[in-house]
Image 1 (cartoon, rainbow, N blue to C red):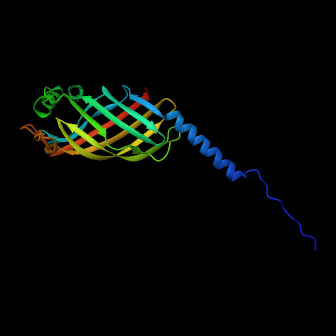
Image 2 (image 1 turned 90 degrees about the vertical axis):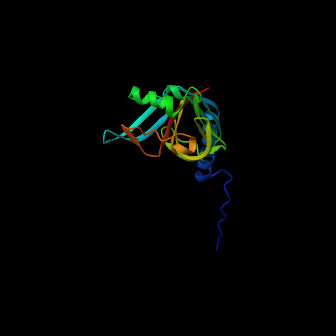
Amino acid sequence: METTVVEADDEPGLETATSAAALDEAAADSEHFDGLWTPIAASEFGYSVDEVLGGVNVTAVGRSSEIDGSLTIEGTTALIDATVEVENIVSDDSRRDGQFQGRIMDVANFPTANFQRTEPVDFGAIPADGEQVTATAVGELTLKGVTQAVTVDVTAQATDTSIGVLGNIPITFTDYGIDNPSNPGVGLEDGGIVEFVLVFERG
């Protein structure tokens, strides 16, 4: 009986070639995003707080788009920092803003609020254009001169020219030396949410 010998093919098969191409593409994506990015005016940093206003439940929201900070990317990890001038955080009610900037946040003595990461954020993968990836950011939140360690889930989305990072941090007012902002006409819970949508372009 004749035996047929099949010689091994030294050329990579389709699966190997595809894997190599995927690795090359991932490396190229990583290099494309590596480096320093800075926030633009599409960004927002602010608060939302549930109020009872004249017996009606409402959600008070204040926002600022004037944000300083940076996003530094290396591979799939990121360093994120953001600072906002508290007096620039405004709502749809000038009376609320006056209370917020005065007796509540005392912007004359504590003009800024900021989030600063204490560990790199590892997103695990470079997102495809328009797709979202999530990660956990460990850092410090400073409000009214008081700094507390926080852990926040963040979501990132990228295009060729911009990167968006969003998240929210529940807070208890007294943890930051903030008296409950309630007054005879407005009732509030004991805490609120610090919210951010940071949009970065290449620095």
